[in-house]
Length: 359
Ligand code: NAD
Ligand code: DAU
Image (cartoon, rainbow, N blue to C red; front, side):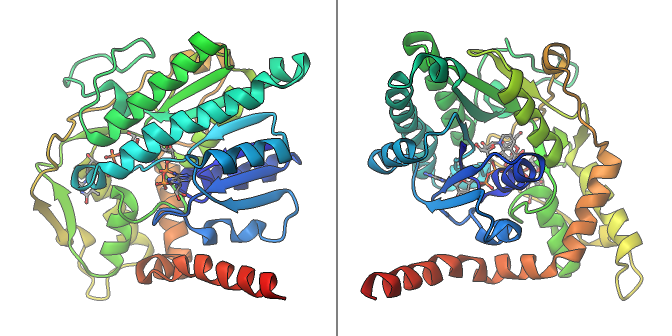
């Protein structure tokens, strides 16, 4: 089996669902269920014996050691992180705790487990660390896209904490020989995306008649990748990536934020027109910029294509249409997130555990 951390979050849950749809190999899913972790994302695999969910922290060494010893995974895929740049500006502590200290403790526990494996299992074992293009910093408008050898110049507490974790992963390979792989991916979008991030926020705010807050002049550029393509890239790197290497993952799809927002508005105009017949774009409002806001990210994804034959399957046009449709068809999921009902799982689960323990 494989151990996935952070598998109740946006990308992790998509990865777990995708994995179980494509393979019979079981998944042990370790997730702390912070505000970003949502068991509803995994509802379709409830009761599936191939999916074992454990609520817990990657920084809980005793728990991780026990899970490794019990389940003997052949690989670890580390998604667990604090992931939202704006939250990292308001409160960086959790980012250091999970992204830096948590990754460090996970690496230590995995190293100890890996060292005790027999030679064949040791050779085949992989630790895949899921990282971001933000570690590279920001680009001038005409600068070439980030390659894997670009300098690391993180600018936000979030990207600094991810860069620190990337460095730890690299060092655990270089010094201890742990067979690690790192992926640095651009902005994902798709189903189960928490509506604090740009695309889902714009969809749910538009439908609720709220304003669509665009930071600064809206001309910051991001590269956007449909989440299923990120999942297929991770599967491919896990399968064929060379230990110690990093692979950039991107969609060859740079767009300014304001164009993203207009695209979402246009799709909603078509698929769920406003009752008053006016365009959703009327709800756009320019607001104060994010402090230290990186102006442009762009990913050069030629290495993963050349060496591992991976390319995105989805265009932005097809991916964003699917995404808007998904949100329109999953109003219940959105409502649970907005009311906080999605967090009831934790309470229900602990109540059930307590009943079971007292029986
Ligand atoms: P997310 O915030 O939606 O999910 C993170 C998950 O990790 C949640 O389920 C949360 O409960 C869990 N978690 C947090 N702290 C934990 C801890 N200490 N122990 C165990 N679980 C913990 O994030 P996401 O957008 O799905 O991102 C997943 C990973 O991919 C992150 O490492 C992020 O840096 C990286 N990434 C994200 C994007 C993107 O566009 N979202 C792009 C590139 C890379
Ligand atoms: O590049 C990969 C990164 O993409 C990941 O590592 C992060 O985990 C992920 O959150 C994402 O970071 P961003 O900061 O790029 O994503 P976010 O959706 O928060 O913002 C996208 C852009 O839109 C960014 O330039 C800020 C802007 N924005 C965002 C929000 C939430 C707005 O203009 N208005 C908003 O309300």
